[in-house]
Figure (tube, rainbow, N blue to C red):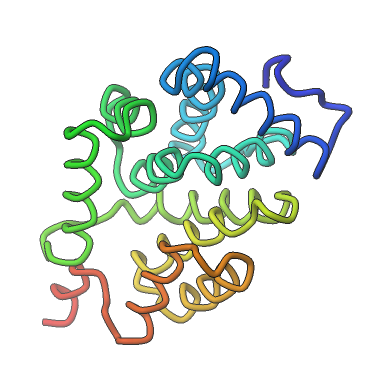
Length: 205
């Protein structure tokens, strides 16, 4: 990480430092530039880690990710979508730096629709497994108040991998931490009603 994070500070203190610095930069620099400053390096590292089977984030990076994906759900969504398939840097940047643009909303809706409706869509299993492991480590290091979103993200990736029982467990834990976590509610509802990712349809025939 860069000098935005004091590596001598951990846990709750680190999370507060990250949150305060990020929100201040959003006010002073604007949302897009703050996203570039705080999240872009982590997004690049995320993609790099998904491309190999070793390595991981430092404690400071894990806490920072937990804070950012809680404060800015578009960053959470970018991490999830990059876990399912390789995406271009420009497309990812649009997702987290310009989340309210029509183009960004269209990408999120397209990917969500493919998950539920497009049997020809095959997520990258290896990337998904690697991302799930990374999100588990983020959740483990996140202090109270910042665990729900990484846990819900993990639940969604498990559901996409057709592991509905494990997904439901994570979703329930996320909702116990934050009963307003809509992603966890979505995963839990899908799991409880036997709704599986569309790609599994090919496997059932």
